[in-house]
Image (tube, rainbow, N blue to C red; front, side, top):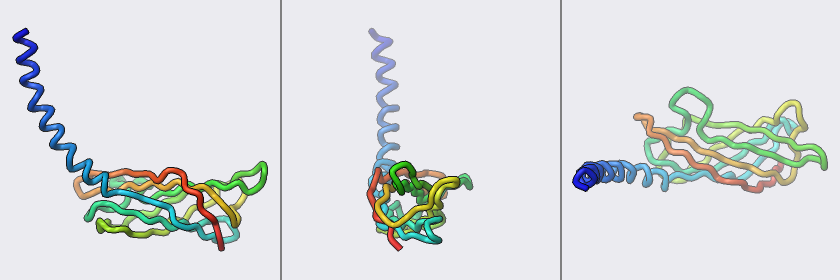
Length: 151
């Protein structure tokens, strides 16, 4: 019994430290969001420019700290006929977060081989990755959003 009490006594401070370290991450994650707003057809459907609104902690940079693609990413899918789906993805990075709502245009290229995008409804998923200089990163996704692609 005494060993169990001693083990628990050593574990309690560790739990307190872990909880204290998690608070800033929870606060930063609460200030992070992304939402697709609109979609514009470009180059006869080879590309769609998707405007997103995002918020991330001030001082963070949108993008991957490891030099890989990332940042404000969008995946777009559209039923162009009864049997064909146009789809594609793209990303934008390098913006500095202000802590306030900002916008970015994410170019989404149609996947080849496959049909081009056209005017009409489509489903978009947006994701945001932003990191500070110490490689502390926040991630958030929008979930599916229906947009109308227009010229």
